[in-house]
Amino acid sequence: MGKAWKFEDNLNTDEIIPARYNITIVPKELAKNVFCEIKPAFASNVKPGDVVVGGMNFGCGSSREHAPIAIKGSEVRCVIAGSYARIFFRNAINIGLPILESVEASREIQEGDEVDVDLETGRIENFTSGKVYFAKPLPKFVMQIVQAGGIVNFLKEHDIEDLMA
Amino acid sequence: MGTLVEEILSRRLGKPVHAGEIVLTDVDYIMSHDNTTPLAIKAFREIGKPVKDKNKIVIHFDHAFPAPNLLAAEAQKRILDFIKEQDLPHFYHQGVCHQVMIEEGFVTPGSIIIGGDSHSNTYGALGSFGSGFGSTEIGVAWVAGKTWFRVPETILARFTGKTQPGVYAKDVMLHLAGVLGMDGATYRSLEFGGDYIENLPVPERIIFSNMSTEVGAKCGLIAPDQITADFLSQHTKAKPPFEQFKAVHPRYERVIDIDVSQLSPQVACHPDVDQVKPLEQVAGLPIDEVFIGTCTNGRYEDLEIAASILKGRQVNRYTRVIVNPASTAIYQKAEKAGLIRIFQDAGCVIGVVGCGACIGRHGGLLAPKERAFTTMNRNFIGRMGSPEAEIYLGSPAAAAATALEGKITDPRKYLEV
Image (cartoon, rainbow over the protein chains, first blue to last red):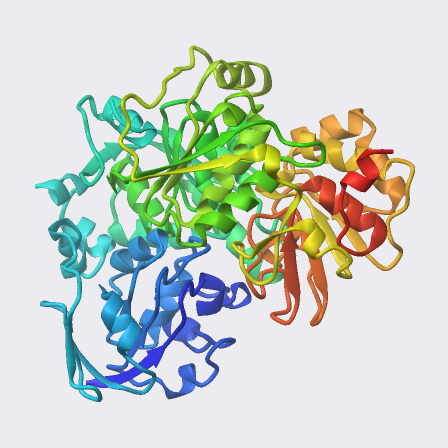
């Protein structure tokens, strides 16, 4: 169980991590400046197991992978959003940042709510409001990448053709 | 059969595919640049398998080249070491990656190109499936030579009529961004059609595909026709024959009809690309920096329009005006035509070819409280420097008129003279 950190619709990659901090690719280093301009309290107060709750079109803008890496580096359990920008979606899956999609949960969970998530089933429970949500299941094809811990790990053991098997 | 994206992927896979299917397909080229290549190399090393086909890999230095600081210099050296180690044949530092990809002939109708840059959608203007990817997938594609796609649903933007003088492709695209919103085409293929697009020269078609990214699209496609084939033969190193094809009995998720003859110059206002207003509503807003360039509007035709307004005039003395031709080839053509001299005489600074001020890492940074008017494709907070600065987007003509007055200015005022 962790605390929810809430963000607005159309959160772009510059807001997740401004370009001037993309001088490293070390997750922990990037995490020091994640959300620094829009939620300065996040980086120093986030705890492992907390949850990032975005709105619609989470992660729009640049193709930079530093954005999901910075979030992963902060050791949050997952991101819950109403929808994801497509490159962010792929990047998050590929680097092994768990992401869940639920319009209702994204709208109703408030900043500071106590939230628990089951990544296997997509079950999201908000202990503060007592409400339970089920995220849209990821396609089976995509789950293979998530379960391997990202595309790099998947390819260490497999060929890309195995994804379609 | 189907929409343009279904047509391209079906041709490539040799079987009909439709929206919603997940496909694994060969890619023709895998593009990346100085910002996105380092993480691709990291993924490549971690996978630990060899490059599948080095002829498919194209690497550009454009985001901050020549390096403006030590960190960028070190990153570029690491990339260069990798290029030497793998003996990669396609390496460029002649301007913005997307423009150079087109000039060098990598982009042809029906091809599939993935790019480690969100504006890889640009190639759709030539009927190529171009799409932006993260760095890890670039490294994956180096090893696999393939990638997976979910065949997207398609939104058709159908433009009819002729634009009024002083109204350009940029204004039309900004208007569409305002209509669709920043997530209006997320995961979708955005197809551009109608008699306006069919008659449009390729340099202006590119603006639509390039900015399809700003509304979330996976790709932004225009049917390749005779105009496409002529452009490729005359202005690029691509070798004919060039395929021509159209959507056949397409099923669109949504069709948006826009009569371009009704439009006036448009501006995307701080802080989002979809905050689009007719220019007259923001005319007079003071501007500290004007930037003309980028993969959106740094082509010869853009410079020509801007120069026609600046010729024989002086820019406002308190406004920095920066012009970055998108590529060396464009720079040379502009120089030969006397455009560079016109800009310099008017008081503009000519920047090095490349992305320039667009990402706030290579000159032209904005101080807090400053406001820029640019020909770029996005105006996110903090993109050009201070997060307390503001960015407005418009056409090269509007940028030139604004440069003269130091405030947002309707270009039609200067075109009528």
